[in-house]
Length: 146
Image (tube, rainbow, N blue to C red; front, side, top):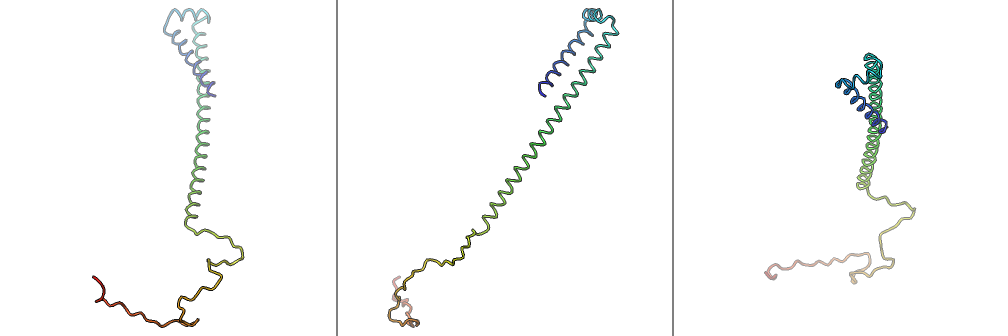
């Protein structure tokens, strides 16, 4: 498409230079009138060529513009899709950070680390099942060092 557009632009420029030469220089005009047969046929031919080139130029410009708009729309759709994915991923990470980790259910109850053998009683003078009633008096505040 770009090559066709450039070719049409070059043709339009060449036609413009040729038309300006014919209109502004009398010597060039007389030589072209001699080739065309009459001034009327020369101007009619220039007009027909101008209309054809103008139509071709408008067609290629509109086609190029349409293709560029389609590419932009496709790029915008892709950008929006990527933004949506990013938002979904961020939302999922935020939810995962807020909820506690899920532990798989195995059907087996587990307890924290507890020794399997009985531990010795920290108060050996007590009978199992009874608590000792030993009262520890508070320290005297006058005997404390300052």
